[in-house]
Length: 323
Image (cartoon, rainbow, N blue to C red; front, side, top):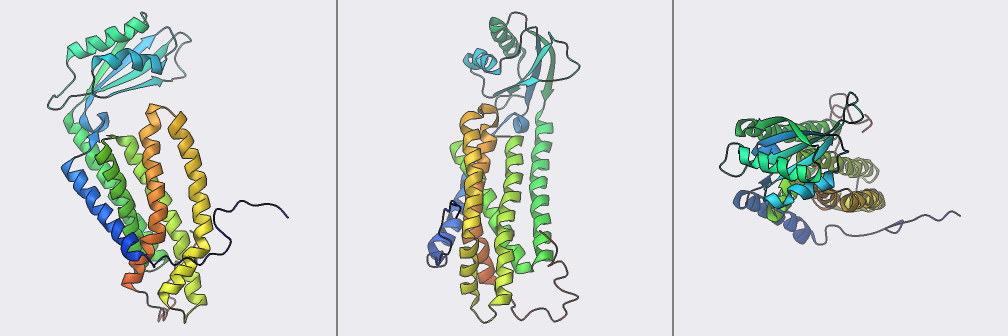
């Protein structure tokens, strides 16, 4: 018989509602604290949201991002992002890098003296380096990016709400969206408390969290719907407990294997993707927790009509569509 790894026993009988005042109440408390931290401390916005200047450099030597970063580290700049630029039209001796410098608070643009200091610092490492272009992004463009980021989050959440509503019932959609909001708010709160740089890559991570978390919740809801048909006389709370126990192994294995890959990326991926990976790690932990302790609790509080639709043709028409 083949040996299989199991994080939990094949059959569990855990009462996930036993400490619901602590688990669900704790989630509400953390969400409120996250909002307070967000409002009181604020986010440490990166270049994308604060505005800044992008310097495009060219050199005959290969670009070493680590050396470039070390060269400008002593200039006291608030936020610098350095990336190598690839283009198939570049010649063999044409090596291009992009150096993005954030503006300081209360300043509209990076002063020329700072640009000259950056150029001089880079030329100490590579004397052949030259600046070929300088582009600035003002506060107005950054404000538009913030609005676009907020709209993207709202639109994604709204689409998920409609999808869950059509696939299940409106009670499920409320529970799912509440769990998603819980995950996003607390993740943003963590970034506010620890003042981790918040830029467009973090918005991409938050959208990824939305997709990952709702997938986990849909798996639980799908099994719950099957069990409600199978155990019509069993109380809703007991059916929910049974459902989460049946899907617990799958939930932990999926989250666990994903976290292994993300932790490796966090340790070895470098500074460029570290914030992105950290956000996803926090989101996956919260998403797994909310699928077990938040989403189903909301559905239980609202209640479900277990009598079934009066007109099957008019209700539940999307129930058999594959997720």
